[in-house]
Length: 320
Image (cartoon, rainbow, N blue to C red; front, side, top):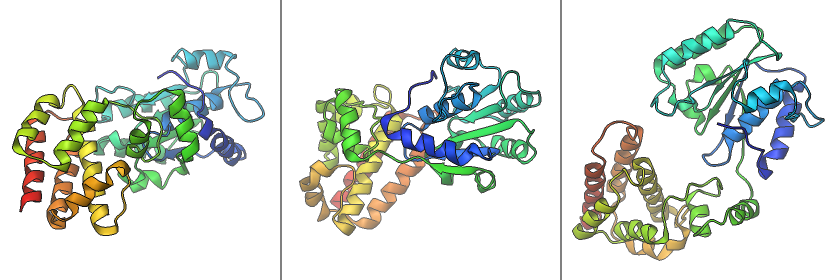
């Protein structure tokens, strides 16, 4: 990943983190927050700044020195990225062993040797334990930066060794301004869908959004088969389809219990119509089923069959 400039809503947090780590640098830092707020961008900017030999008064990298040039060319000898291989479903212990080899030697041009774990939730148990071991017995020049959407998905023994820094989503006006600059269609829908996290992958056009809403608002057998033919888990990622279903179920439960909607605020009348039909116990069971599928979304599954199976369970939950 090439480094990007900090987003507008991150600038004060960047200064804050620099102030907090200026006097004493922790051995490991955990950057966490909601999906879609720019955690990786923040991490790359902060790491480049730590490696830079000519930072400005705010602690930001100069982008001119040899260290910055090497970092921008993805060839910095004192930087190792764990988890950058997206083809690897889970980060393996073999990758951690490479990191061990990396920090076993002294730094080349910078004060620290930095190890980034881009998505800490992708550590399998063996890899997490191997990472824990090198965090327990680090070399003096080693600095770990972990990034996560969900701090609870990381081993507590790892988080306990980290300085935890939460990155927050922008205020609504800032998020809207950013999306307007990106010329995003259906801006209000996507901002609600992302819970005000503006780094959105808008994977659906208006017609496709309407197909999702139709099959979830008033499902019938014909529409389920039409939907699974259009969305087979390949043209639109299976993980995104599951995310859409899960957010709909969450809103369905929330509206039934508290009359509140988080992700689909434009569809209050749809939820009002569904409220009389649902059995909360069955909807919770569907939610558990979705969470199970989400945990397996990167594995080899018959996506089309899983989508149809879920929608038929949803259809039956509304009929009984």
